[in-house]
Length: 131
Image 1: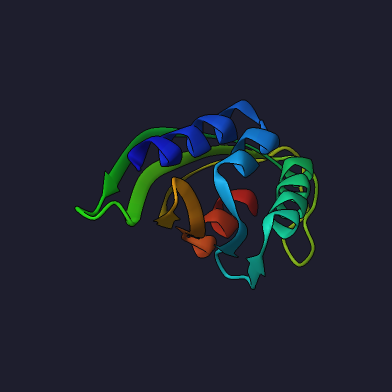
Image 2: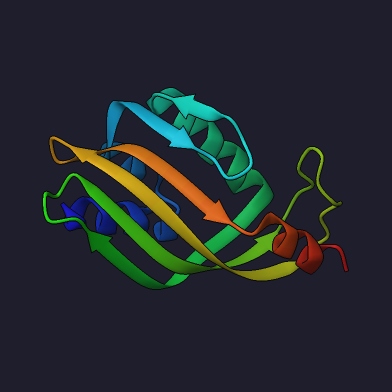
């Protein structure tokens, strides 16, 4: 099951939302850092579209772990990003760069990802882009 998580992140780094969606169940639960839970591929795709407009991100230093049953996984990585366009309720964007440690947690079912929970330190991000 680690393979589906690795494909998900490879697709993220390639900017390939369709390939990311192919890794997800139809009813995927997407728990966004500091945000609401989105359910389903359509909501996930809309989130990705918004993120691509506001942020250019590449993940590095990836470590993926799975539990013995293969039903859960976790990943730790570094987000290397550029803030492209102002996002609602956040500081104004003017091309600021940022580097953040982050993590994601997954439920896995039937060879696909059924839950994605992402965490990063929002206060650290705000400090980096508020210059």
